[in-house]
Length: 77
Image (tube, rainbow, N blue to C red; front, side, top):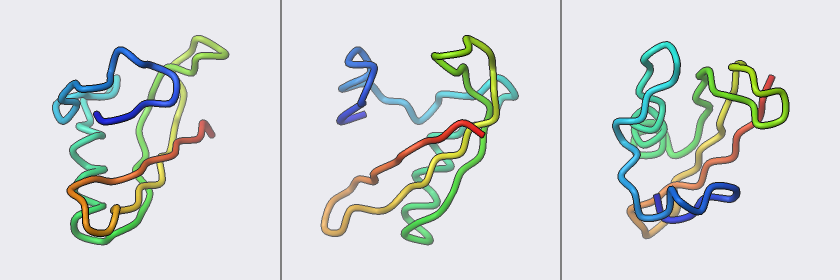
């Protein structure tokens, strides 16, 4: 993790093994989407910081041209 908009403690951490509450490797899937398609959506279940409940979430990822990185922006459904 190079940057995180709300959780500074995640910066510098390897998040590739992070799983959602159903066991989905969502960060690994985000990396795969960015590498293979360039852009796309990844769906998973994650705690909503407002409601404090696990809720469906979707993150749109886009590969950063010329870098080994992607940008992701998530929304709760």
